[in-house]
Structure formats: C-alpha cells, structure tokens
Length: 200
Image 1 (tube, rainbow, N blue to C red):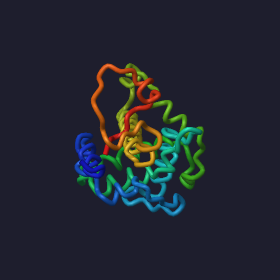
Image 2 (image 1 turned 180 degrees about the vertical axis):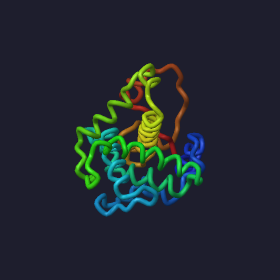
Image 3 (image 1 turned 180 degrees about the horizontal axis):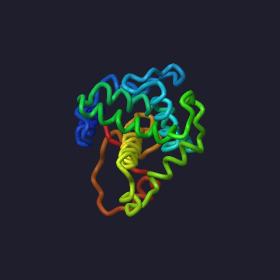
Image 4 (image 1 turned 90 degrees about the vertical axis):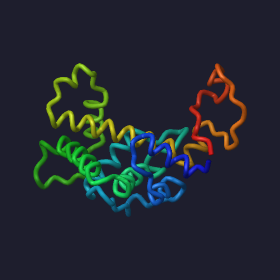
C-alpha cells in the first residue's frame, strides 16, 4: 500500500470523509511561507489563533521540529475546507469561534487578535485541556463547546503532525520495508522508546 493511500485510510478511520490530495500535499514536504498563508475556511484572525494554539500544543524542541514547521495549521484548515460536509464545516467553525470568544471576551471591540500573548493562549489550553472530568460537569454550554473544539484541535494536530513525511521518517521509528512481526518485545530495545511511524 502506498503512503498516500494509507493516509487516506487513516483519515477515514478517524472520521474524516476523505483526505484531499491538496491537503496532503501541504504535509508532504512542501513548505508554505507562514506569513503569506491565507486560510481557506477560517478567517485570518481564526487562522492566527489556530496557529498559536497549535504551536503551543506541539512546539519545536531540540530533538524535533514543531507543528508550524510541518504546516499543521494549514493542513487542518485545508482538510476542513476540502473534505468536510457543510454540517461538519459549520460545527468546526462554531468551535473555533467559541475559542475566539473565550480569548477576547474582556477585550475592547477594536482589539487586534495579533496582540494576544502566549500566556493568554497557554491559559486557555490549561483551563480546558488540563481540566478534570468532574470540573467539566460544571461547564456551561459555551465552555463545553470550547473544550470540545480545543480537544478536537489537539487531536487533529497530533494526527497531522505524526502523519507528515518529515516526522514519520526522521523523528518516529521508521521502517520502509516491514520485516517479521515480533511480539512481546521491549519498545526501548527495539526503537529506543520511539513510537512506530506509519509504514509505507
């Protein structure tokens, strides 16, 4: 099975209707200039917010590139634009707008999204993604929507990140030609503790 076909199957198994070829091309080695990115489904401000959140969810480290370096925000936007039906698009946008509202609720109407600080982004991630199940029971309707949107964004970001060729081949344990299956072995001995990449 070719890598592109395998990625499409993974997309289907995760509930995505299809992974559009143009969305996949963003992940597979093409480099978009971040400052020139124009979102297809999101607004410019929503794109800024998604980029900053994704950067905190999967930041650059000494050992691996960050999500921004492998075009994860661009992929998430284009995937939704190309492959979501209208109902799913509306649900996706509604969740992103809930995040925007949470981040700007106390701001002046003329406030610019680009002025939001890293601390503000970090605070919303901590408030929702580090919340305990018992605390979520007290969330109001908007807070539940925000939590769902942030959890979904995190899940999409991790999936897209691990699906990139750069991460799959250079960060995760990668074996282009699968060998024999060995059960009950220590992952630390086999891959130095790395998760397996999707095999081609």
